Length: 423
Image 1 (cartoon, rainbow, N blue to C red):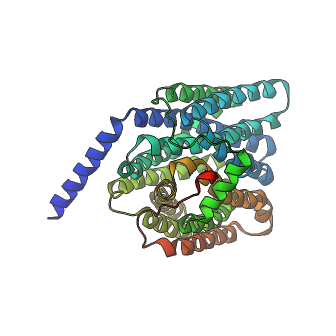
Image 2: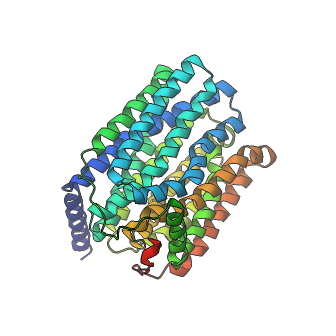
Image 3: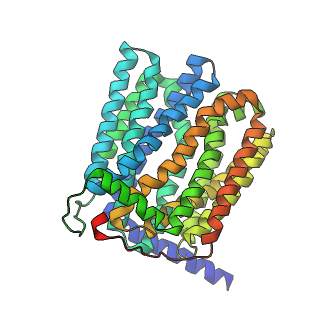
Protein backbone atom coordinates (compact mmCIF):
# COMPACT_ATOMS: atom_id res chain seq x y z
CA UNK A 1 0.00 0.00 0.00
CA UNK A 2 2.75 2.41 1.03
CA UNK A 3 4.76 1.44 -2.07
CA UNK A 4 1.82 2.20 -4.36
CA UNK A 5 1.28 5.56 -2.65
CA UNK A 6 4.94 6.52 -3.12
CA UNK A 7 4.86 5.41 -6.75
CA UNK A 8 1.72 7.45 -7.40
CA UNK A 9 3.34 10.50 -5.78
CA UNK A 10 6.43 10.13 -7.99
CA UNK A 11 4.27 9.85 -11.10
CA UNK A 12 2.32 13.00 -10.17
CA UNK A 13 5.57 14.88 -9.59
CA UNK A 14 6.96 13.74 -12.96
CA UNK A 15 3.75 14.74 -14.76
CA UNK A 16 3.80 18.22 -13.22
CA UNK A 17 7.48 18.65 -14.05
CA UNK A 18 6.92 17.55 -17.66
CA UNK A 19 3.99 19.95 -18.06
CA UNK A 20 6.00 22.84 -16.66
CA UNK A 21 9.09 22.22 -18.79
CA UNK A 22 6.98 22.15 -21.96
CA UNK A 23 5.97 25.72 -21.19
CA UNK A 24 8.08 28.24 -23.12
CA UNK A 25 7.82 30.82 -20.33
CA UNK A 26 8.98 28.34 -17.67
CA UNK A 27 12.04 27.28 -19.67
CA UNK A 28 13.09 30.87 -20.28
CA UNK A 29 12.51 32.11 -16.72
CA UNK A 30 14.42 29.16 -15.24
CA UNK A 31 17.42 29.62 -17.59
CA UNK A 32 17.42 33.34 -16.84
CA UNK A 33 17.40 32.60 -13.10
CA UNK A 34 20.46 30.35 -13.50
CA UNK A 35 22.46 33.08 -15.27
CA UNK A 36 21.31 35.69 -12.76
CA UNK A 37 22.32 33.51 -9.81
CA UNK A 38 25.78 32.92 -11.29
CA UNK A 39 26.32 36.68 -11.51
CA UNK A 40 24.86 37.44 -8.08
CA UNK A 41 26.91 34.84 -6.22
CA UNK A 42 30.17 35.77 -7.94
CA UNK A 43 29.46 39.40 -7.04
CA UNK A 44 28.38 38.70 -3.46
CA UNK A 45 31.38 36.60 -2.46
CA UNK A 46 33.88 38.69 -4.38
CA UNK A 47 32.61 41.83 -2.63
CA UNK A 48 32.53 40.13 0.78
CA UNK A 49 36.08 38.74 0.57
CA UNK A 50 37.39 41.95 -1.02
CA UNK A 51 35.98 44.10 1.79
CA UNK A 52 37.23 41.64 4.43
CA UNK A 53 40.74 41.90 2.93
CA UNK A 54 40.65 45.69 2.62
CA UNK A 55 39.33 46.35 6.16
CA UNK A 56 40.94 43.42 8.04
CA UNK A 57 37.52 41.99 8.87
CA UNK A 58 35.87 45.16 10.17
CA UNK A 59 32.34 44.19 11.35
CA UNK A 60 30.82 47.55 10.41
CA UNK A 61 32.18 47.44 6.86
CA UNK A 62 30.95 43.86 6.41
CA UNK A 63 27.47 44.75 7.68
CA UNK A 64 27.36 47.70 5.24
CA UNK A 65 27.55 45.21 2.34
CA UNK A 66 24.21 43.82 3.43
CA UNK A 67 22.82 47.33 3.89
CA UNK A 68 23.86 48.20 0.31
CA UNK A 69 22.05 45.08 -0.89
CA UNK A 70 18.84 45.43 1.10
CA UNK A 71 18.31 49.14 1.80
CA UNK A 72 17.18 49.81 -1.80
CA UNK A 73 14.52 47.14 -1.36
CA UNK A 74 13.01 49.17 1.47
CA UNK A 75 13.30 52.46 -0.40
CA UNK A 76 12.35 51.43 -3.95
CA UNK A 77 10.12 48.37 -3.55
CA UNK A 78 6.91 50.36 -3.14
CA UNK A 79 7.66 52.55 -6.16
CA UNK A 80 8.94 49.60 -8.20
CA UNK A 81 5.79 47.58 -7.48
CA UNK A 82 3.55 50.42 -8.71
CA UNK A 83 5.56 50.80 -11.91
CA UNK A 84 5.54 47.01 -12.40
CA UNK A 85 1.73 47.18 -12.57
CA UNK A 86 2.00 49.97 -15.16
CA UNK A 87 4.71 48.52 -17.38
CA UNK A 88 4.82 45.35 -19.46
CA UNK A 89 6.51 42.73 -17.22
CA UNK A 90 8.71 41.01 -19.84
CA UNK A 91 10.10 44.30 -21.14
CA UNK A 92 10.70 45.51 -17.58
CA UNK A 93 12.72 42.42 -16.64
CA UNK A 94 14.86 42.55 -19.79
CA UNK A 95 15.72 46.22 -19.28
CA UNK A 96 16.47 45.78 -15.58
CA UNK A 97 18.97 42.96 -16.21
CA UNK A 98 20.59 44.91 -19.06
CA UNK A 99 20.94 48.06 -16.94
CA UNK A 100 22.32 46.00 -14.04
CA UNK A 101 25.06 44.78 -16.39
CA UNK A 102 25.84 48.33 -17.49
CA UNK A 103 26.09 49.49 -13.86
CA UNK A 104 28.46 46.62 -13.04
CA UNK A 105 30.78 47.53 -15.91
CA UNK A 106 30.74 51.15 -14.67
CA UNK A 107 31.91 49.94 -11.25
CA UNK A 108 34.95 48.32 -12.91
CA UNK A 109 35.96 51.72 -14.27
CA UNK A 110 35.47 53.25 -10.83
CA UNK A 111 37.74 50.60 -9.30
CA UNK A 112 40.43 51.29 -11.87
CA UNK A 113 40.34 55.07 -11.71
CA UNK A 114 38.76 55.77 -8.32
CA UNK A 115 38.45 54.29 -4.85
CA UNK A 116 37.92 50.66 -3.80
CA UNK A 117 34.82 51.76 -1.87
CA UNK A 118 33.02 52.04 -5.23
CA UNK A 119 32.60 48.26 -4.95
CA UNK A 120 29.52 48.84 -2.79
CA UNK A 121 27.75 50.33 -5.82
CA UNK A 122 27.95 47.01 -7.69
CA UNK A 123 25.49 45.68 -5.13
CA UNK A 124 23.53 48.90 -4.65
CA UNK A 125 22.49 49.55 -8.28
CA UNK A 126 21.57 45.92 -9.01
CA UNK A 127 19.44 45.85 -5.87
CA UNK A 128 17.56 48.99 -6.92
CA UNK A 129 16.78 47.58 -10.37
CA UNK A 130 15.64 44.26 -8.91
CA UNK A 131 12.76 46.11 -7.21
CA UNK A 132 11.27 46.76 -10.64
CA UNK A 133 12.13 43.31 -12.02
CA UNK A 134 11.02 41.00 -9.19
CA UNK A 135 7.30 41.95 -9.05
CA UNK A 136 7.21 41.79 -12.85
CA UNK A 137 8.43 38.18 -12.61
CA UNK A 138 5.60 37.33 -10.22
CA UNK A 139 3.09 38.84 -12.66
CA UNK A 140 4.47 36.64 -15.42
CA UNK A 141 3.95 33.51 -13.30
CA UNK A 142 0.30 34.49 -12.84
CA UNK A 143 -0.16 35.42 -16.53
CA UNK A 144 1.48 32.35 -18.11
CA UNK A 145 0.64 29.50 -15.70
CA UNK A 146 -2.55 27.83 -14.50
CA UNK A 147 -3.20 28.37 -10.80
CA UNK A 148 -2.69 24.69 -9.92
CA UNK A 149 0.82 24.80 -11.44
CA UNK A 150 2.02 27.98 -9.71
CA UNK A 151 3.08 26.40 -6.41
CA UNK A 152 4.95 23.59 -8.21
CA UNK A 153 6.69 26.13 -10.44
CA UNK A 154 7.67 28.15 -7.37
CA UNK A 155 9.12 24.97 -5.83
CA UNK A 156 11.38 24.41 -8.83
CA UNK A 157 12.24 28.11 -8.96
CA UNK A 158 13.35 28.04 -5.31
CA UNK A 159 15.29 24.82 -5.94
CA UNK A 160 17.38 26.68 -8.54
CA UNK A 161 18.21 29.28 -5.88
CA UNK A 162 19.03 26.46 -3.46
CA UNK A 163 21.47 24.88 -5.90
CA UNK A 164 23.41 28.13 -5.97
CA UNK A 165 23.55 28.30 -2.19
CA UNK A 166 25.83 25.29 -2.66
CA UNK A 167 27.56 26.20 -5.91
CA UNK A 168 27.54 29.99 -5.53
CA UNK A 169 29.93 30.38 -2.57
CA UNK A 170 32.36 27.87 -4.09
CA UNK A 171 32.20 29.58 -7.47
CA UNK A 172 32.42 33.09 -6.03
CA UNK A 173 35.34 32.25 -3.74
CA UNK A 174 37.23 30.48 -6.54
CA UNK A 175 36.74 33.29 -9.07
CA UNK A 176 37.84 35.97 -6.60
CA UNK A 177 40.89 34.09 -5.32
CA UNK A 178 41.94 33.04 -8.84
CA UNK A 179 41.28 36.23 -10.83
CA UNK A 180 40.71 39.06 -8.36
CA UNK A 181 37.98 41.64 -7.95
CA UNK A 182 38.09 43.18 -11.46
CA UNK A 183 37.49 39.92 -13.34
CA UNK A 184 34.88 38.86 -10.77
CA UNK A 185 32.84 42.01 -11.35
CA UNK A 186 33.24 41.70 -15.14
CA UNK A 187 31.91 38.12 -15.06
CA UNK A 188 28.95 39.36 -13.03
CA UNK A 189 28.10 41.85 -15.77
CA UNK A 190 28.34 39.20 -18.49
CA UNK A 191 25.99 36.90 -16.52
CA UNK A 192 23.43 39.72 -16.21
CA UNK A 193 23.59 40.35 -19.97
CA UNK A 194 22.99 36.64 -20.67
CA UNK A 195 19.98 36.71 -18.35
CA UNK A 196 18.54 39.69 -20.26
CA UNK A 197 19.08 37.91 -23.59
CA UNK A 198 17.32 34.74 -22.40
CA UNK A 199 14.34 36.73 -21.09
CA UNK A 200 13.67 37.94 -24.63
CA UNK A 201 12.57 34.35 -25.40
CA UNK A 202 9.55 34.69 -23.09
CA UNK A 203 6.24 34.96 -25.01
CA UNK A 204 5.27 38.55 -25.73
CA UNK A 205 3.47 40.52 -23.03
CA UNK A 206 -0.27 40.68 -23.43
CA UNK A 207 -2.42 43.50 -22.15
CA UNK A 208 -4.63 42.92 -19.13
CA UNK A 209 -8.33 43.58 -19.55
CA UNK A 210 -9.19 46.75 -17.71
CA UNK A 211 -10.80 50.08 -18.33
CA UNK A 212 -8.67 52.74 -19.93
CA UNK A 213 -8.60 55.23 -17.08
CA UNK A 214 -5.79 57.66 -16.46
CA UNK A 215 -4.49 57.52 -12.89
CA UNK A 216 -1.45 59.03 -11.27
CA UNK A 217 1.35 56.98 -9.75
CA UNK A 218 0.39 58.26 -6.29
CA UNK A 219 -3.23 57.14 -6.76
CA UNK A 220 -2.10 53.68 -7.81
CA UNK A 221 0.22 53.39 -4.82
CA UNK A 222 -2.65 54.39 -2.49
CA UNK A 223 -4.96 51.82 -4.07
CA UNK A 224 -2.28 49.15 -3.48
CA UNK A 225 -2.18 49.99 0.24
CA UNK A 226 -6.00 49.90 0.44
CA UNK A 227 -6.00 46.53 -1.28
CA UNK A 228 -3.59 45.04 1.27
CA UNK A 229 -5.53 46.51 4.21
CA UNK A 230 -8.73 45.02 2.82
CA UNK A 231 -7.34 41.48 2.95
CA UNK A 232 -6.82 39.84 6.33
CA UNK A 233 -4.36 37.27 4.94
CA UNK A 234 -2.12 39.94 3.45
CA UNK A 235 -2.16 42.03 6.64
CA UNK A 236 -1.12 39.07 8.79
CA UNK A 237 1.51 38.12 6.24
CA UNK A 238 2.89 41.66 6.50
CA UNK A 239 3.35 41.40 10.27
CA UNK A 240 5.02 38.01 9.81
CA UNK A 241 7.33 39.66 7.27
CA UNK A 242 8.37 42.28 9.80
CA UNK A 243 9.27 39.78 12.51
CA UNK A 244 11.16 37.50 10.13
CA UNK A 245 12.99 40.50 8.64
CA UNK A 246 14.18 41.67 12.04
CA UNK A 247 15.51 38.19 12.81
CA UNK A 248 17.25 37.62 9.49
CA UNK A 249 18.78 41.09 9.59
CA UNK A 250 20.44 40.28 12.91
CA UNK A 251 22.18 37.12 11.79
CA UNK A 252 22.87 37.50 8.06
CA UNK A 253 25.76 39.99 8.33
CA UNK A 254 27.28 38.02 11.20
CA UNK A 255 27.37 34.52 9.69
CA UNK A 256 31.02 34.93 8.80
CA UNK A 257 31.83 35.71 12.45
CA UNK A 258 29.93 32.58 13.46
CA UNK A 259 32.63 30.74 11.51
CA UNK A 260 35.64 32.73 12.70
CA UNK A 261 34.65 33.13 16.38
CA UNK A 262 32.27 30.35 17.43
CA UNK A 263 33.89 27.62 15.32
CA UNK A 264 37.36 29.25 15.24
CA UNK A 265 37.84 28.47 11.56
CA UNK A 266 39.21 30.57 8.65
CA UNK A 267 36.65 32.90 7.00
CA UNK A 268 36.73 30.85 3.78
CA UNK A 269 34.93 28.03 5.66
CA UNK A 270 31.71 30.04 5.38
CA UNK A 271 31.25 28.54 1.91
CA UNK A 272 31.01 25.03 3.41
CA UNK A 273 28.33 26.02 5.91
CA UNK A 274 26.37 27.58 3.06
CA UNK A 275 26.92 24.48 0.95
CA UNK A 276 25.31 22.25 3.59
CA UNK A 277 22.49 24.77 3.91
CA UNK A 278 22.05 24.64 0.13
CA UNK A 279 21.90 20.83 0.07
CA UNK A 280 19.06 21.07 2.56
CA UNK A 281 17.34 23.68 0.38
CA UNK A 282 17.55 21.48 -2.72
CA UNK A 283 16.03 18.53 -0.87
CA UNK A 284 13.46 20.81 0.72
CA UNK A 285 12.48 22.23 -2.66
CA UNK A 286 11.95 18.74 -4.04
CA UNK A 287 9.90 17.66 -1.04
CA UNK A 288 7.83 20.85 -1.20
CA UNK A 289 7.13 20.22 -4.88
CA UNK A 290 6.01 16.65 -4.15
CA UNK A 291 3.51 17.84 -1.55
CA UNK A 292 2.59 21.15 -3.22
CA UNK A 293 -0.83 19.96 -4.42
CA UNK A 294 -1.89 18.67 -1.01
CA UNK A 295 -0.33 21.22 1.37
CA UNK A 296 -1.77 24.75 1.68
CA UNK A 297 0.88 27.50 1.40
CA UNK A 298 0.13 28.85 4.88
CA UNK A 299 0.92 25.41 6.32
CA UNK A 300 4.26 25.38 4.49
CA UNK A 301 5.01 28.85 5.84
CA UNK A 302 4.20 27.91 9.45
CA UNK A 303 6.36 24.76 9.30
CA UNK A 304 9.24 26.70 7.77
CA UNK A 305 9.11 29.45 10.41
CA UNK A 306 9.16 26.94 13.28
CA UNK A 307 12.01 24.87 11.83
CA UNK A 308 14.14 27.96 11.17
CA UNK A 309 13.54 29.25 14.70
CA UNK A 310 14.92 25.98 16.08
CA UNK A 311 17.79 25.92 13.57
CA UNK A 312 18.82 29.52 14.31
CA UNK A 313 18.75 28.96 18.07
CA UNK A 314 20.95 25.85 17.97
CA UNK A 315 23.31 27.33 15.35
CA UNK A 316 24.04 30.34 17.54
CA UNK A 317 24.69 28.23 20.62
CA UNK A 318 26.83 25.61 18.88
CA UNK A 319 30.61 25.65 18.93
CA UNK A 320 30.84 22.15 17.40
CA UNK A 321 31.28 21.93 13.65
CA UNK A 322 29.10 18.88 13.03
CA UNK A 323 26.23 20.32 15.09
CA UNK A 324 26.41 23.65 13.28
CA UNK A 325 26.40 21.81 9.94
CA UNK A 326 23.39 19.76 11.04
CA UNK A 327 21.38 22.84 12.02
CA UNK A 328 22.38 24.59 8.79
CA UNK A 329 21.01 21.58 6.93
CA UNK A 330 17.78 21.70 8.97
CA UNK A 331 17.29 25.40 8.29
CA UNK A 332 17.98 24.88 4.59
CA UNK A 333 15.61 21.91 4.39
CA UNK A 334 12.67 24.02 5.57
CA UNK A 335 13.62 27.40 4.09
CA UNK A 336 11.85 26.62 0.78
CA UNK A 337 8.65 26.18 2.80
CA UNK A 338 8.88 29.86 3.80
CA UNK A 339 9.74 31.14 0.32
CA UNK A 340 7.22 29.00 -1.55
CA UNK A 341 4.50 29.67 1.04
CA UNK A 342 4.96 33.45 0.91
CA UNK A 343 5.11 33.75 -2.89
CA UNK A 344 2.18 31.40 -3.43
CA UNK A 345 0.03 33.20 -0.86
CA UNK A 346 0.71 36.57 -2.48
CA UNK A 347 -0.17 35.24 -5.94
CA UNK A 348 -3.27 33.33 -4.76
CA UNK A 349 -4.71 36.19 -2.70
CA UNK A 350 -3.96 38.97 -5.18
CA UNK A 351 -5.57 39.96 -8.48
CA UNK A 352 -3.13 40.16 -11.39
CA UNK A 353 -3.55 43.93 -11.75
CA UNK A 354 -2.39 44.43 -8.14
CA UNK A 355 0.49 41.95 -7.83
CA UNK A 356 3.19 44.59 -8.29
CA UNK A 357 1.69 46.96 -5.71
CA UNK A 358 0.96 44.22 -3.17
CA UNK A 359 4.53 42.97 -3.50
CA UNK A 360 5.74 46.57 -3.27
CA UNK A 361 3.72 47.11 -0.09
CA UNK A 362 4.69 43.89 1.71
CA UNK A 363 8.35 43.69 0.71
CA UNK A 364 9.36 46.95 2.47
CA UNK A 365 7.91 45.59 5.71
CA UNK A 366 10.30 42.65 5.47
CA UNK A 367 13.34 44.36 4.03
CA UNK A 368 12.89 47.57 6.01
CA UNK A 369 12.92 45.56 9.24
CA UNK A 370 15.90 43.60 7.96
CA UNK A 371 17.87 46.71 7.03
CA UNK A 372 17.24 48.19 10.50
CA UNK A 373 18.79 45.20 12.28
CA UNK A 374 21.49 44.79 9.63
CA UNK A 375 22.54 48.39 10.22
CA UNK A 376 23.04 47.79 13.93
CA UNK A 377 24.24 44.17 13.76
CA UNK A 378 27.91 45.14 13.68
CA UNK A 379 27.46 47.45 16.68
CA UNK A 380 25.44 44.87 18.61
CA UNK A 381 28.18 42.31 18.07
CA UNK A 382 30.59 44.61 19.93
CA UNK A 383 28.15 44.85 22.86
CA UNK A 384 26.69 41.35 23.07
CA UNK A 385 27.81 37.81 22.35
CA UNK A 386 27.00 36.29 19.00
CA UNK A 387 25.09 33.57 20.88
CA UNK A 388 22.71 36.14 22.38
CA UNK A 389 22.11 37.75 18.99
CA UNK A 390 21.21 34.42 17.35
CA UNK A 391 18.84 33.53 20.22
CA UNK A 392 17.00 36.84 19.83
CA UNK A 393 16.69 36.14 16.10
CA UNK A 394 15.15 32.73 16.89
CA UNK A 395 12.56 34.37 19.15
CA UNK A 396 11.63 36.76 16.35
CA UNK A 397 10.92 33.79 14.06
CA UNK A 398 8.51 32.48 16.70
CA UNK A 399 6.80 35.87 16.87
CA UNK A 400 6.32 35.76 13.10
CA UNK A 401 4.89 32.26 13.39
CA UNK A 402 2.27 33.43 15.91
CA UNK A 403 0.83 35.85 13.35
CA UNK A 404 0.50 33.08 10.75
CA UNK A 405 -1.54 30.82 13.06
CA UNK A 406 -4.88 32.67 12.51
CA UNK A 407 -4.79 31.71 8.81
CA UNK A 408 -3.09 28.34 9.35
CA UNK A 409 -6.31 26.33 8.90
CA UNK A 410 -7.72 28.49 6.12
CA UNK A 411 -7.42 27.37 2.51
CA UNK A 412 -8.08 29.10 -0.76
CA UNK A 413 -8.28 32.76 -1.57
CA UNK A 414 -11.09 35.16 -0.92
CA UNK A 415 -11.31 37.66 -3.76
CA UNK A 416 -11.68 41.27 -2.78
CA UNK A 417 -13.81 43.62 -4.79
CA UNK A 418 -11.90 46.81 -5.38
CA UNK A 419 -13.74 49.85 -6.73
CA UNK A 420 -12.92 50.20 -10.42
CA UNK A 421 -11.87 53.79 -10.03
CA UNK A 422 -9.13 52.75 -7.60
CA UNK A 423 -7.49 50.34 -10.01
